[in-house]
Amino acid sequence: MFAKVKSQGIFGLSCFDVIVEADLSSGLPRFDVVGLPDAAVKESRDRVRASIKNCGYTFPVSRITVNIAPADIKKEGAFYDLPILISILVASAQLTADISDCSFIGELSLNGEIRSANGVLPVVIQAKESGVGSIFVPFDNAVEASVVEGIDVLPAKNINEIVAHLTGMKLIEPVFKRLDEKEIISDELDFCDVKGQHEAKRALEIAAAGGHNCLMIGPPGTGKSMLAKRLGSILPEMNFEEKIETTKIYSVAGELSKGSRLISKRPFRSPHHTISAQGLTGGGTNPKPGEISLSHNGVLFLDEFPEFDRRAKESLRQPLEDGKVTITRTSGSVTYPSNLMVVAAMNPCPCGYFGHPTRQCTCSDAAKKRYRDKTSGPLLDRIDIHIEVGAIDYEQLSGKADEEHSSEIRKRVNKARAIQLERFKGTGISCNAKMTPRATRQYCILDEDADKMLENSFDSLGLSARAYDKILRIARTIADLDGDEIIGVNHIAEALQYRSLDRKYWR
Image (cartoon, rainbow, N blue to C red; front, side):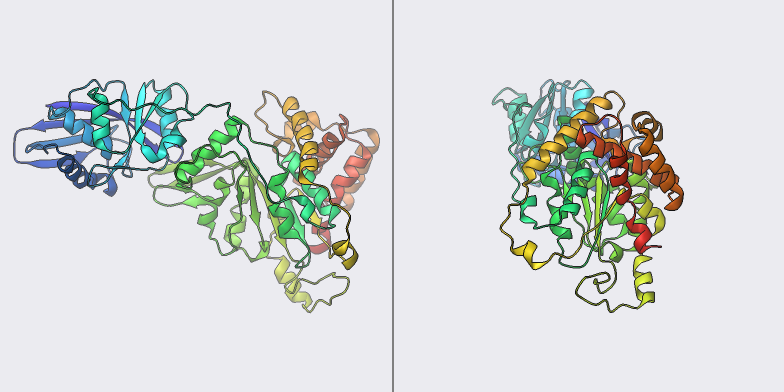
């Protein structure tokens, strides 16, 4: 007896169609799984055998061969438990149903319950693109999978529910989440909580408006972390494509909570400075996304920036330039998107009080140099905005004046982003910070005075070609906030201020 069942596999974010074939033949009882399975897939033999018996069916006493095609792609994880079981039930004539338009994914427990799995959303998208009519998924992954249109998502808690549906005894209702539902996002963190620091707030507003990376330098206790944690409250809302991209990454990483829907709030990741380079970029035998990819379409906040391992910091270079992370292992290469904003914070010296108006720095010149040299010049050059967050006096802290709320700042950011979306329509560019060199020359038009100022500053500040492009992009964002099409001298002057701290501290 022979049967075949449709399923899907996943490697990184890439999904592929799988056919699970079962053949029952005479001979000594044996259960073989072929098709380049890993250890977890091979162990499915024991889970499937126990599930069949505990659900009231008969495990065939014959030579069973299960092939998971295509055989040239390594199959990993417990994704294939359910399709293997269904193929055996069909091959042994214990299940008679038309399953040609169905796909199955899920891990089994020994009593036939279907456990939740990672990566269900991209797998359902792959099934839909392959023309599958309906797909059976674990019940706990139903909400995650239900956002995909054009395919019936059938959530099941156990094997008996699936058999009852296929035989017509009790149908499973497909789940579907309306795509026009408005997600309500509330932010408890607000910029109005931060007293003073208007220059830093302005810099973060520009960073949010143009998607620029930012480095904040200042003594301890000046509000660097407070400002960074409130950056999400002024970022523009994600569109549907960004929500799908972000949710797919979290689904593959196993970071989606039970019953969660699309991720509607931009991610904010704040790893500890002891994290390894692999923790940032991702890795493993079957490479999983790291903190860089988990920050896709959001913010990666690196507090105490110099204290991060040098290899970990330098691993940011390629993602900041290319917008993606490629992890290569013997099993293959995986590419994860990393369209993110990096916000870093650091003290000016080991004790933290270099340049403080009232407290004396106790660090030697050599100690200060060693501390700053932990951050390399090439990495600094890739960070668009450098801003000094100075100490606040008592009058500012105790003042009764109302600070500007995040909602007001966000309106200006949304207006600037709307200009950019219209400008870059059809180009694949999402914001000013992601402009290519050609796009930078095309869209960053300077008036005569602005061009003269930038020319004089290029040599006097010793700017690199990369820094030149970044200044133009920052100035483009400032002009967008002002609603100006041409970049003026005031826009260039403000942009140049955000590229001067590396000359002050790393001269």
